[in-house]
Amino acid sequence: MGTFKIIPTKLKGEVKIPPSKSMAHRAVICAALGNGISKVTNIDYSDDIIATIEAMSALGAKIAKKDDYLEVCGIKSTENIEANKVKKERIIDCNESGSTLRFLVPIAALFDGVNRFVGRGNLGKRPLDTYYNIFKEQNIKYSFKEDILDLTTEGKLKSGEFKVKGNISSQFITGLLFTLPLLDGDSKIIITTEMESKGYIDLTLSAMKDFGIEIINNNYEEFIIRGNQTYKSRDYRVEGDYSQSAFFFCADALSNEVILNDLKLDSLQGDKEVIDILARMGVTISNKNNGIIGTADEKLKATIIDGSQCPDIIPVVSLVAALGAGKTEIINAGRLRIKECDRLAAVTSELNKLGAKITEKEDGLIIQGVKALKGGVEVWSHKDHRIAMTMAIAATVCKEPVILRDYECVSKSYPQFWDDYKNLGGVFDEWNVGK
Figure 1 (cartoon, rainbow, N blue to C red):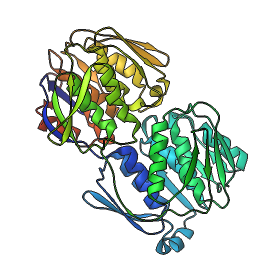
Figure 2 (figure 1 turned 90 degrees about the horizontal axis):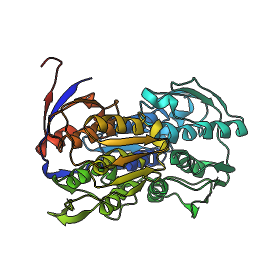
Figure 3 (figure 1 turned 180 degrees about the horizontal axis):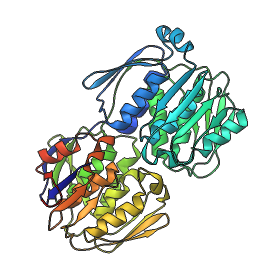
């Protein structure tokens, strides 16, 4: 992996926000489960989306990758049904995508044969107990290895009542929501604790509705699912990604001047919360040149940030908080410890190297604002795309250059990030020891 030397430079200009990774996962899955040919446009071939495309292909969909759209012939299409009958064993490579893994485990249980899930990085450390409990109840065979992803399942899921905790990853609930409408018989998902990450469930239900699936949501306490439904083929455009927009909104909060294009203002994405968080800190979001830009007050304010509904934006909003006046608290963010890296530890370690004052808690952070970040040190992405991009935005407000190790990991979600950063005026080059 490579190392960049990033020169402190203000970003200015316009950027087209890439398509939503969350919505792209969902659109690919819904189209692939369908009964005809769908066209999914405004697609970005990040590592995670490629993982989902290849996973659904392994289950029997035929997916053709064009320059910026997908042509998806669904698993339930007449031409695919006979071909899929002969598949008795399949390998589903999730790479490092937690969404792919947790969405696909129950979906794979729609089909006969053996499914083997493999992957890389920290994926094998992400808990799957919710599914293991269901497998035990329904006598579905499964085996796995500790700390690496090598999971084998055999057996078909049956309709019924599923009790799931709401304070674990919403990806388990989404996986079941995708799957249960295709089973014989009706089902119900009962949420046994307070629901976190409701925004991600909203995205799932929205995508499924667009593809013809009806789910009754009773205040996120239970979901009523009629069986024997059919995903209908359609043309679908993926909206812009608020998870990625957060980096540039936060850049604006730190006196950069970036206009963000291709965002849906009435989006259901949970990470749209970045706008409300920054507003509490003194950042005004307004329209400019048919896009959106943030403008900060002279002094950024401290606030309390609940990470339960928007965990992916916590690293970069922590950067803004590090330069605010007073003490900001990040709460309910324990799940960040089992992402691509331990993001609470990584944010603390790397921003503190730059001059921030951050203290870790078990499920959050205490951030005491400082007047400036100094830079002049080497930081590490921890091979986590969101840490890498946070460090790039941090470099714009440092006094000295920042050396970033393992910068290429942005390909997981935002392959053209460094191109966009450069086009906005960002300055960086390859860095070698002793250079």
